[in-house]
Structure formats: structure tokens, C-alpha cells
Amino acid sequence: MIRKAVLPVAGFGTRCLPASKAIPKEMITVVDRPVIQYVVEEAVAAGIRDIVLVTSSSKSAIENHFDTHAELEASLEAKGKHALLESIRHIVPADVNIISVRQGEPLGLGHAVLCARPVIGDDEPFAVLLPDVLVDNALVENAGSKTDSASDLSGMLAAFERTQEAQLMVEEVDWQHVERYGIVAPEGDAPAPGHAASLSGMVEKPARDAAPSNLAVIGRYVLPGDIFPLLADTPPGAGNEIQLTDAIERLRVKRGVQAYRMQGITYDCGQPLGYLEATLAFGRRHPTLGDAFNALLSRYHQGD
Image 1 (cartoon, rainbow, N blue to C red):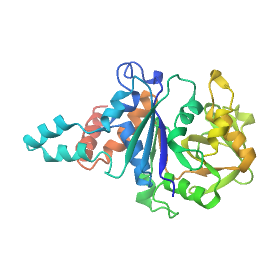
Image 2: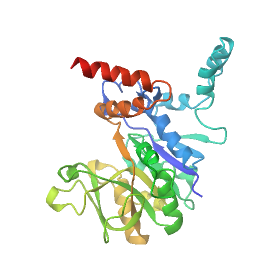
Image 3: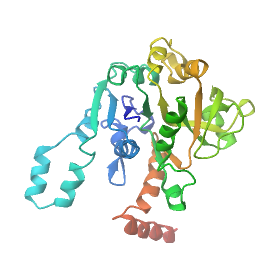
């Protein structure tokens, strides 16, 4: 069972400026919690128990969020604010470990993942979750999933266990927008939602007429430990950075890579409009704030 995940959180978050000037973009809230907490909760729900945060010197707020705050807890307990106390005591379950490693220089996503090598090791598979992306499986859960997986991440982990091939989560995007994404080329037919298929290659931001499909990689990976020697030997690519995609392509040639087609939807929280969309989606069904939030939306809609 895959129990480790890497979350690269060392970037500057320039698409979120000025909000991310003084606080990490991962700490900007969606409704009542920072976006990084949703991503960690996704990993924990899929069975991950070791969360490796690849951070930088400006990201201590993320580490603090998952740490104990004894003074705050004592204050809440003294004031009888037990619900709030429970909400900060159980951000992660007691059996989940939050581990931080530093990426000293911003040398690319591939380098960020490589920084986790001493914690993960070369003999164990692991997941990579980009905290820019929120994966939302609520509509699938409400409709009744056609697969046995509780979430798309769970489905990816199960697909790796069956095949021992790396998994890239992909989402169908509008053909007019394929040039914004890394696009996969399935060997045969595209996989159905909730299923995986082998790849013959990947293309980074192809032109519309050159795209092999409209299935875009969206920030979730399950990789074998032997990706690390490949990353260590990968020269700088686009942007003079070590690209995870380059190492994955070498891995594909060596032992195969599959695309897992998600059933849910995603929100790009690396930019302000994505945060707003995520806030709308999560706010409308929030267990305590949802009714009041929907009333607010109706009031503003009527005003238009």
C-alpha cells in the first residue's frame, strides 16, 4: 500500500500576487480552511500517512498550520470554545506524519520532487500532489461512482498497485485549450473515467492541430521510487529547470506509464479565478455555512 506523498510548496505563487506577497499561496483560504489543508485531506482519505512538504524559507506558515499551537489550544479550552478547539486539534489524524524538507533553490518541479528522495527512498512508490489543484469528487459521490474507488486519488493508487506502472491523473479539457497543458497520447483508445490506459507519449502545450488527445495532466502523480535516479540524471529543460515531465518520459520508455482519467473535476487555485470558483463550489455545500452562503448568492443574483 502506498503511504507516502510529496507536496511541492516552495514556489513563489506569482499568479496570486499581491495576495501571496506575504503569505504562501497555499495558505489562502477556500471558505474556512487553507487550500493546502484540502489537498492534505485528499491524501489522508486515500490512505497516505506520510506527507512530505517540499518547502522554502518563506513557507513556515504552512508548517505552523499543521503543527500544535499549545497557547491557542489552551485559550480556546479556557473560553469553552470546544468546537473551534476540535477543529484545530484534528487538522490531521494522529497517525499522519507531516515532514518538511527544504528546496534551497527554485530549480523546477522535478528538482522539488527530488528533494524528497532522502525521505521517500528509491525502493518505495509514492504520490505527488500539486497544491495548486483541488480535486473535487463530490458530484461523483452524490451520483454514485461507477468504480470501487472512493476518490480519484484512491483510484490512481489502486491502478498502480495492479500494474506497477506510474500513473498520471488526466482530465478532459476543451480542444481549444490544449495548448495550455501537458497532453497525453494514449496507446489505444482513451481510458474511460475511473480507469487507466498505457501511454505512447506526452506533449507539453501542443498546438490544437498537433495534440494527440484532449486529456491534460492536472497535478496528481503516482510514481515508483526509481524515478529518483532518473530525476538526478535529468538535465535542465524548459525554463532552465529540471522538469518532472522529462523524467517521466524516460520512465515511460523504461517501464511504461499510464494515464488515469479522473471522474471528478478540478479547480486551479494557482490563480485568483480558480480560488473564487472553488469557494463557490465548496461554500454552497458547506455543512454549517452552506445555507447562508446560498442565500447570499440568491440575494446578489436578484440584485442583478
